[in-house]
Image 1 (cartoon, rainbow, N blue to C red):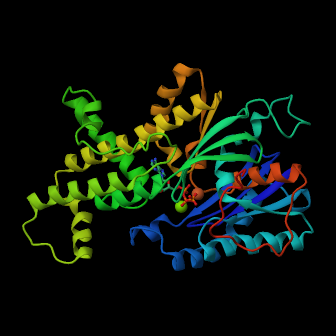
Image 2: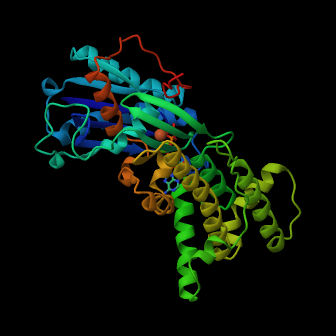
Image 3: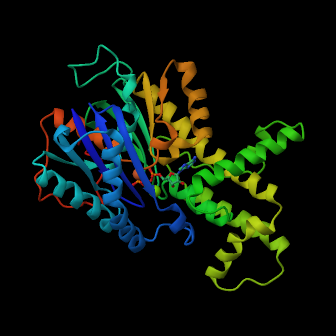
Length: 387
Ligand code: ATP
Ligand code: MG
Ligand code: FE
């Protein structure tokens, strides 16, 4: 079954063609990073206008790259939430219009569920010979029941997934999402937007410096002592404490090197933002390495605990922060001794893309689910948890 997926929930415009929910025929993503970098974060008004400019060329390119025609397509899917209302509206409207014009079924997709299904994606050449009739399972798929750690720009959730579409929430963040913490701390350190990749890069640099000085790489991660919110007895997370600690540390560090008195709060922020240039670069890198360690350690340990309690044999990572190499390594170390399999999407499919949208849609369509064309955007949509 061939599905055209469309994603426009935030600042990425995506279109992709997927066969049977797993096999990728084309994937096009137009990113607005360059535009929002100037403001240190996503500006919703700018994002939706840019979505409008990108959507048609992105869809056309995805069709061209797959080399398929409209009459070969079986269904159209688009994200309807969660996300920015104005951005969501663009992809959803185009998706519904294409479904109407080509007389195809339409599926509105939950963006968070799609992040989970990014773990089902693979190349079109990777289809096993055995995989024709059973839509539920193809060789190489993650195996249920599994624990999914969703760590993205706006969500941090630990979810027990018993089967396709069967979600139980074990815990979630009480304040900032993991990706949000990366983005805010990168801003404090003057490392730019998006923060996750920038912090990872700075942390790697700190570790390389340690190696050059013939010290243990772990010394970079322990350079600053940062708080970890364990919230024992729950699977909840909290990242605002470590973020505030970073703010104070950055303030202390800048105070020593900048003599000008501090004025209004926003002036303070612009001073932190300049820190990368003013401080010795290695201070910033050590702060980045220590911060990354504090976040990743809590995520990895709590995910392992959930895997043990629910006795699953499989853990999957989802969302932009799943691209983080330190998180992947930490989790691998936690899970390998238990014989629990860890999978995560290829880096480019961790952050927003439309392939994962087409994938999630496939599993709904196979259960006979589709939407009417009066479906509206739902900016605050959550996963459909079991009560
Ligand atoms: P949501 O999916 O919750 O609606 P979103 O779509 O904005 O939010 P994603 O695209 O899934 O979020 O992920 C973006 C986030 O991932 C950003 O916060 C970014 O900093 C973070 N991120 C990307 N790469 C990395 C990395 N290598 N390490 C840590 N964080 C990363
Ligand atoms: Mg984005
Ligand atoms: Fe996302």
